[in-house]
View (tube, rainbow, N blue to C red):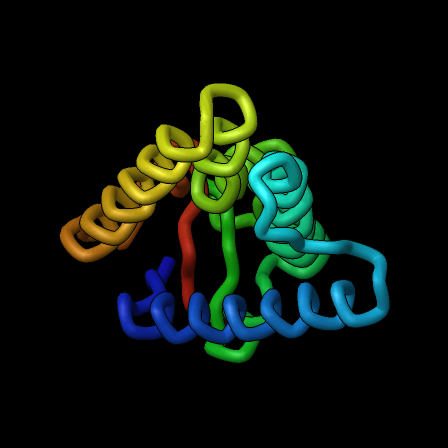
Length: 150
């Protein structure tokens, strides 16, 4: 397996963030979701955001082996054997990477959830930077690798 470069992963992440911002903007504009800044709506909003983000990453990765950002950068997510990762590992991977903070915020409070989410994101970045196979925490727990697509 030829692992994707750190730069490829970063650019793919930026592309995915832009795509998700457009999706959320469209859903908000047509009234399907409403993101409020009020304190009582923040838990629901956080859960809705987490569901949208995880659904984007999980559905695309399970169906196509990559998100739009990874596809644009010529990458895919695979299991230990180099096969397209299955739904279970992808779901585990994405909940850890994308939604852990939001899920914890809904259970134990926004401040703690956001702090955990930020800590996890920092750990993921550090691991990708220094791991020889460029695996983040979410990759290791999910048993996945991000590789160059052939």
